Image (cartoon, rainbow, N blue to C red; front, side):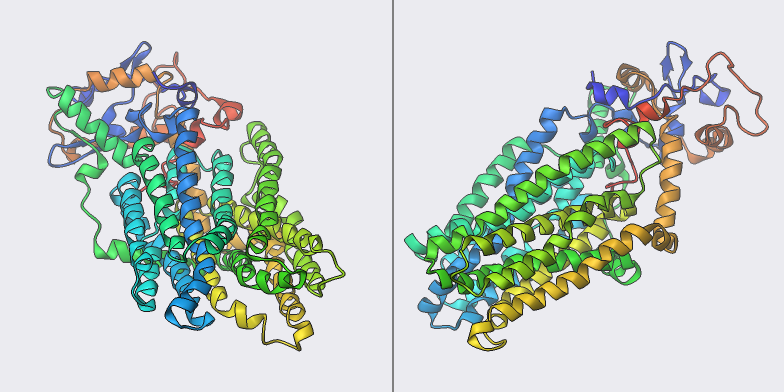
Length: 609
């Protein structure tokens, strides 16, 4: 029996009389009469195989996992994301040790950080198509294993080039957000995944800030090679947790498993039932290149993606600029190694505060959708960002003033860093949440572009941050003017938030992609309202009663006009006599259809392969 949320998601099917052509194709029945024949939901192939639709796997998909199971999975993925972002930022604490051991300059030693971040940005995109083809679980396990193995190269490196190679391969092996966002889409619909998305944004942002905090203790008390051993130990722990606690969530993988189970346990009746992944051909090079290239294409064709990704990338780059600049600034107050690491605590606190402040916003959106499913536009997901985005520039200008040093108390620059952290978190959350709402099935590419911008710009920042804070102006002003420049850039980048908030519908109206997505969602909503029965047991009985006969596509046209009319919400097709007046279709109404875990949550257009 499925969970309550799984049952609520399905409205009662319109019972229809069994047409002569139905015989031998379906034994699906309900107490009120035969349900819609399975072949109108599935794909009948010329080779006689019947592709099992996901609507007939209710109770076995990620959408139907219990809340406890979903959040257990998400908690493990949270730890995985923290580990990967920790790997990116903790490297800064090995720079001095690398300089001393290999006799290299500081800028050369920072190459290892830059190449990891840039490779991480591209690696996340390279893994994406394979997680859609093979499944989330094996790809994440493969990624974690490769990342952990790559830690051996810098940990045992006899020279610095080996360190750089190890960092590059480690970044390229990191699946990162591409798989994480896909798993969220596997378990929640576009309008019910905001709490989960908020949680994962905290892991991504928080991991970067935790690196310098714990790295300071490694730098002070251990050899620099322990920076990489600690990464490997943490990676091994999260990989083991993922291995033991996280199941496969990809929809088509689970449907394939159910089809194999039916053939095994119901071999006489279901010998011709197959999952979509079992009959689908493998990815072609054209498919792979199209998936890899789509984020870059959306950069060029979708101004919303470009502007918001640049803003998000700039705000994330600030954290990696701080990794280098904080040491220069807080030396004015005589901070030692541990104290320098603690300067990132206000950033962590800022992230936690920003995370919590999103709860009332998300709750308000939830209540509005219950009353009126169509009231909220994607731009509503930027509301909180319009209030908090200015904190980015305010924090930077305040930090610039505080860089003059004593007699200004050391807590003053930390307060302004706290504001920057709140803005950085809300920028990432707001932009990703907006792209999910605006771009639907293409949101993976849109958010992939966002992640790519964040990682690449952060990697570039790792290289210019040191000279940026040492070569502009006289020694007295070398910390002030670079921060002022960053504040001015922050003002320029945040303008895009208000342009998109007020003009977003107009901009999207000019986007052919956005308009196609809006139309597809309307069609999908109409289709879903007529597909599945009232109770999960009816579906399970339908599968048990299914009698599969070799079927060709030539048998399907007799149903096409009638069923397409029903999917459009009509009670009978053009030219068809009106039948079964006693059993009209059930309309769950907006109060039901918009509840979390209801009809709209089961969105086949979102996050699917």
